[in-house]
Image (tube, rainbow, N blue to C red; front, side):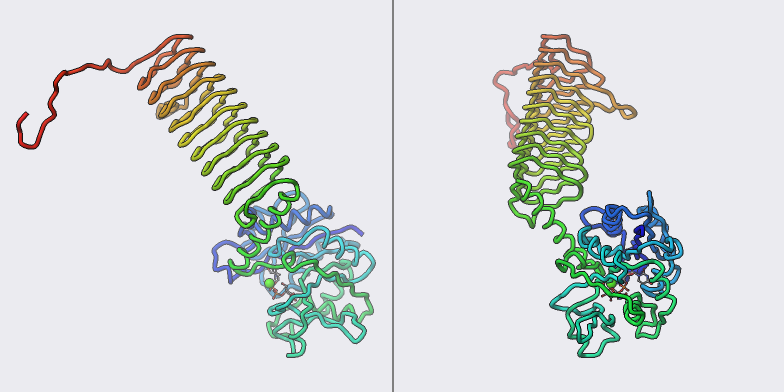
Length: 456
Ligand code: UD1
Ligand code: CA
């Protein structure tokens, strides 16, 4: 039997109090539904059917792609009704796994256990034992301990409410069997909805085996109903990320103050201080030290790099032995070679800094090549924009640019040149030449400052 996944995503999510469909709210920077789609894809199904509500266009836009098709459930008549909307799209020989777009952390291993149960012909449920079963459907078992049905809390007796084995909602069965059961369910319950959970009692009547997999922990099967739930799941996810990094040899100073919003690879003996946010694809080499309050997005950071506090690094590649910060901003398109120093209040954009270059204080370097061992003094600005176009600044090796200079692009400063402090450079400077453009200093001896009594 080939696997097909149905993901329920049609609920309004009223408790989010949001203009955005619930399943588009993000966890670790990614819409909830994308977490579930990723987990589903890893199971290598033949197809994924997403059951969307009336605001399906927005959901469809993120859920599109290979394997995925959306089915619109115009009216939310219940979880059983939702599954019925997608079943005609699944092949009759399919084995169907039902997932929820608002249950983002369920793991592939757990789902494989559920699928195995259904592959043996059973109706396979994922259950979990919790301290506080409030709000969940309760699992009913007979005297022999076999599952007899599921009762929703609002339809349950007082005794049944004390049961703390609950339904996660996730289940798997053959498409044909599910279709048969769902054709027989009614909406005679407190909410007048067609409950997917009613298939359990029908399977029991038909003598179909019912298999239960116990989820290894509650976090995996928690759903998002409110922004409070979202915050709880975000932390649970981030703790997982921190644990994974630590077990791969990374020091995380405080696992509660690290945020990973993407894919991170790290070598050995890296250290992440508090409030580090890693987004997109971030690759860290060996012995990288990231100080507090750093945001690093889609960047490669080489061995032994030190990033001091409060930097933002985005779409950059930083080679081994570089030191950055504190308070530096490295913008897209920046390539930094080995042993470069970038200091405080420095902004670098779309530039190449070659080995050993230094930009230590208060500078803007944009659309520029900075040669090997070149020193850029404090407060140097590359004027790369003329109001309409961007222009490049080319600076050779071993150049010394004094403090508070403006380099008006396009301009080339050849190897070994020196620019006097306070100069505005508009013409190319030949190699090993001193260029100074500031006015000469003059002296007025014995100068008296104005004073309040009018006397000089
Ligand atoms: C459901 C289960 C309950 C289980 C709980 C776990 C039923 C009847 N109950 O209850 O046993 O303990 O999940 O969280 O299944 N949805 C649709 N279309 C609909 C109705 C719902 O797509 O017409 C989607 C919702 O978007 C949501 C999911 O199905 O993602 C669950 O629906 P919800 O109404 O939240 O069910 P619960 O009352 O939580
Ligand atoms: Ca729910």
